[in-house]
Image (cartoon, rainbow, N blue to C red; front, side, top):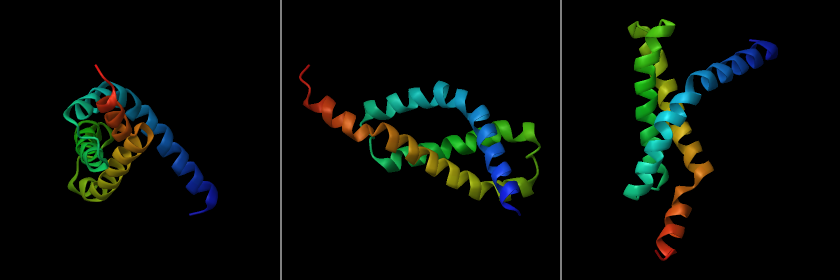
Length: 110
């Protein structure tokens, strides 16, 4: 695989990932983030676990639209899903840092 092909593949994957994942992230991800905050689950493992669950749900719902119906696609896609879900949850946690919000909210009188 040449460097141009690798760059094209990664770019195309990022574009499709953003296209497919942007709306569900806002519609589903934001309310789930609020639920996690209210329950006090502000540690990274909670976000990684939720990202993993959401990745499998998204693959089960969207996968057949792209022809991922065979068992081979699931065998190949499962490791990618695990990695994408965990990394996605960790990235959301790292950007948002809900553990800092929880500490600030606990100190605020009200």
